[in-house]
Image 1 (spheres, rainbow, N blue to C red):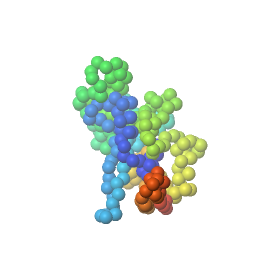
Image 2: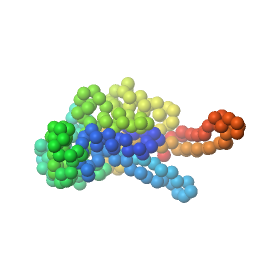
Image 3: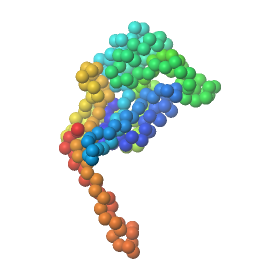
Image 4: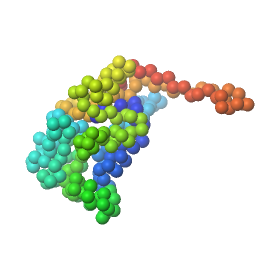
Length: 236
C-alpha cells in the first residue's frame, strides 16, 4: 500500500469505506487519518497522514502472540485468526504503530439482528479479540482492491504487488521518482519492522497565487482563473 501525502485531502472517505466494508464496532477504526500541522508560524501548513496496519515483513505482533493467532499469507498480508485469538493484548503492546485494537465493546456497526451484521460481520470480527486492517483480504482474493483504495477520490492510495514491475504501485513509484524526485519512505523506520505500507512525502514547495478579478464588468465569466505554481523538488 503506497499513500501519496500530496494527494491526500483529509476527507476520511477511506475511514468510512473501511467501516462500511468491515462493519467494525463503534470504537474500532482500521483506517485512520491523522491531521497534522507542520512548520513554524507564519509558514504553517496542514498535512493529512492516513495510517493503517503496515503488514510488516518482520511483524512484531506475529512474534508476540502467545496463541499463534497471527499469520502471514504467502502474498504478505498479515491476519489475526479470530478463532485462535484469546484477547491477551500482546499484539497490541508490541505494535509500534498502534494499529491493532482490542476491545470488549459489543456496540456493532449496525443494529442487532441485521442480516449484514449477523452473517457477514460478526463471524469475522469476534467480541473481545484483537482486530486490525486486513488489506480487505476477502476482496483481494476475488481480484478486487481494498475498499479504502476504491473510495479515495484523489487516488492517494495505490495498492499492488511491488515484486511486479508492471503493477500499479511499482509503475507509480518509478514515475514519481522521475517526475518529482520523491522516493517511498516508511513510518518509524527505527522500529525495524520492514513494513509493506509506505508513503510519498508532500511536495517540497507549494505556492498558491490568486490573480485578478473579472476581466470585464460586462462579462464576469471571463475572469482569470486561479493559478497554482507547484515546484516538485523531492519529498520533505
